[in-house]
Structure formats: structure tokens, C-alpha cells
Image (cartoon, rainbow, N blue to C red; front, side, top):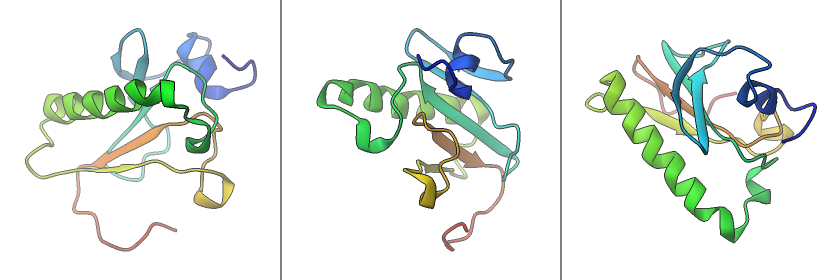
Length: 116
């Protein structure tokens, strides 16, 4: 855990969140500034700053994140119409919190234009 990381503070319960999923390794919660009607952030509890910092031993965690995304999609009933998953890496990509996280976007038809 990083002391000044917003997501680490959410994980520790120091900052409230609207959780949709939690287990020992992953937490998922509604984004406070959603860009689509459904905008969930899926975050590993292990602090990993960017995708470039993912190590071989973290591969199980990345796989589990996608399993959790599938579960959330089914729980929310969005699997039939589809959804988008975005993971930003670094400032130029739009990564605002330096703790890897995956945006699950759904609830409206999404275009093919790259965001930004």
C-alpha cells in the first residue's frame, strides 16, 4: 500500500466508495465521474503503479481481474449488449491515479473513436 494513493485509501476504507465487488485481492467500485451510464473501476488491492510495473508473478492477478470484470458484467446484465474495458498507462494516456485500474464502461452504444 502506498500512503498517498487514493485507491490504496479506498482499499483501506479511509475513503468511501460505492463498491460493486470485493474479495481478498480485488475491489471494484463506481467511478465518481462516470463517462458512461455504467462506469466501474476494477482495482487490484496490491499497489502496482502502472501496467509497465506488472511483474510475472502478478499474471494471476491480471487474469483474475478479467474474471471479475466478466462476473460484474453478468451481475449487471450488460454481457449481451457488450461493454468496453480500458486500462491507461502513464500520464499521456490519461492515467490520473498511479495504481493500475481497469475501467468497465457500458450502458450506451460506444463509438469507435479513441477517447480524448
